[in-house]
Length: 246
Image 1 (cartoon, rainbow, N blue to C red):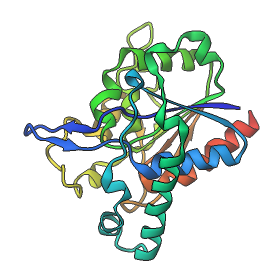
Image 2 (cartoon, rainbow, N blue to C red):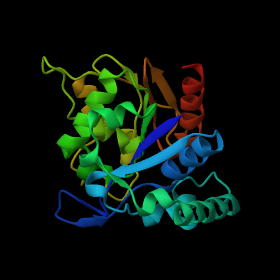
Image 3 (cartoon, rainbow, N blue to C red):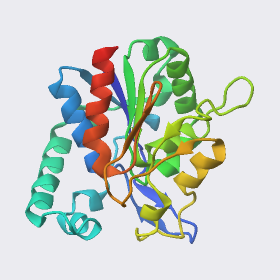
Image 4 (cartoon, rainbow, N blue to C red):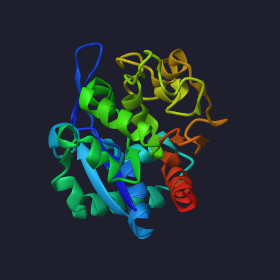
């Protein structure tokens, strides 16, 4: 099967206080699903807005930061994971020459079996603002394609509306990076949007894990959502099972 992976093209995020905060895509949210998709024998293409080579958020490959965020984890494991993320990112040819979202037409979307939208705070800066990405997603929905998204990748869904002006995912069960998790980041109170609040406002039936940073995945119809970076593996495995069943 062919899977289209969408990544943010933003290397910084404009915060409410005016700071251009270094950002990008979150390493684990790309590397883990990408690796599992390829191991399952699927073809993976990467697309960004403008066909810009995506930037990895440096904190997502910093073992000390990973240990700070989730101190219950093993420092050795965090270091090994960070090294693996860097290795995969440096060797993934799709990251060096991504497709431009704007170049994709309805027939191009029809040529893919599924879409996966990766996260990272950088996604807030461009994914919900792209009319071209919204059109790609409308085509995917109309063609009944399975869609998966993790963490802040859900920002890509915010601007979608159907022919009656309604959000197409109204009433869907889903999860995403929680407000509680946002509050422990160094951008708390300065982000241009809080994803949990936005999804709830639009009509999502939002769910989250019992504790922050725990893995949590929700499937509702053709939409699969993961809460945070640590949900990436479970999300990808769940998505692959859906593709196998399809």
